[in-house]
Image (tube, rainbow, N blue to C red; front, side, top):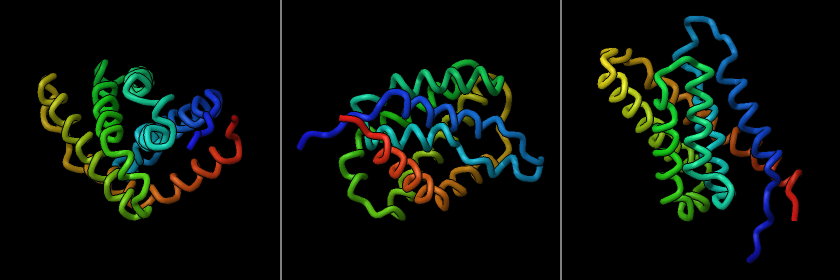
Length: 161
């Protein structure tokens, strides 16, 4: 079965949208519930187009995210590389999961990312982050099916040979 390639422009546009959603200001009461948009887009493309998006893309997007958010250099890069690795290892199985199971896997992977974030913060001497950082992966549990469907419809509409 030959798979059609996805244009680089479409992949770049989805990551640009994810980066933009990441820096949209939110009220203080909602900051802890901000989904990890870049990780969700990375997970989607690692599942659907692994020959084009993988750990290198995760590293690059992580560095961009570090620059945009002013966080510790390499913090998001390491987390997104590990996310891309995990998804790359289980993508064949994950493609056949129903959306609710995919959402559970994505939530678990992003909880793992939050553990890595906590570890890096501790090693850097910033102390233990607030426990509310676990809310974002739980929000992703509920919005992943919608994000997946929107990205999938977009990919199907703009796919090339």
